Amino acid sequence: MTFSAAAIIPAAGIGTRMKLDHPKQFHRLSGAPILVHTVKAFLKNSHINQIVVVVPADWIRQTREIFAAYIDEGAEITIVPGGQRRQDSVLAGLNAIDREIDIVLVHDGARPLISQTVIDDCYEAAINDGAAIAAVPVKDTLKKGDKAAMVTDTVERNNLWHAQTPQAARRELLVKAFQQLGGEDVTDESSLLQLAGIPVTLVVGSESNIKITRPEDLQLAETIMCSRTNIPIRIGHGYDAHRFAENRKLVLGGVTIPHPLGLAGHSDADVLTHALCDAILGALGEGDIGRHFPDSDKQFSNIYSISLLEHVIALATSHSYSLANCDITLVCQAPRLAPFLDEMKELLAKTCEVNNNSINIKATTTEKMGFTGREEGISCHAVVLLHFYN
Image (tube, rainbow, N blue to C red; front, side, top):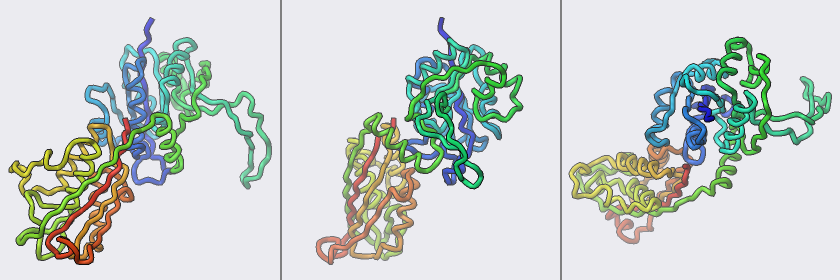
């Protein structure tokens, strides 16, 4: 007999310990938001018939947009608003699953490294035993302390387990537990099931199935993800040069620079952004900027080159690649560009959907040698590193 299953992914918390200006589940990890990695793990599992993602009410629209950008079309994902407590969010998810669902697996949105084996084991245990929880045996010596942070006792670690997720149950058992004890404050579903008198089986989880709670967890998750999937990286180099021209604005990195001369070109001739686009296209093996935005096409006449960069980033996303970092060198005798570099950096980072420290821009001269030294134009080199996140 086949049992249908749904995954409820509570991701309605804020994650204040991460000290971010956005909920931690939407923070980027290996090129994609943490929540995307979590959802993709359940999309890959053959037992899962439905996925319900529970997010903060004011993040519903952004979540839909994120899934549209990072997850293949046609994926059956229901998005619902969460509540104040974890159990309120889980109940919202439970109310949203289809009637024919037999098994419910609840998994933290901030546990993106869940393996298919652990999902399978929890599913099977719920079928056989009614309810189950992924957990790992405690290995370290445990100490009990007082309010003054003084050790008061050593805790016997035999038969102690670190609770993880998924936590799985037959649907009717989880519904029963909520009906009986939904008003109780509990930290997870297994606690609710136990209070309702429903036995819960321990399933051996994985040490790598970490919950991202603190900033240092991000670095650990990146390391685990790289070692597990051997994430490929791609390197690209871009170069562009434009001569000065009268009656043109000087636009570099999307920023208009005060100068009597601009740069000649079919678009706004933003030599920096063009070099960056070429570097990304090169890393993707997608030719160059001229192939994608030919100067024979009138729609690109005087176009703002940041719009071209947006198209290039969208192309990279469609290939499951994200910008890890870039290093850009502007070669220009005049004007002096140092006062504008931070503004360029911020705009490029926003367009590329990365942190500001992933963008580095330098400006140099050629000591009056060559065409840039003679102030005939400006050139730019860009080197990028892309990483694969699917």
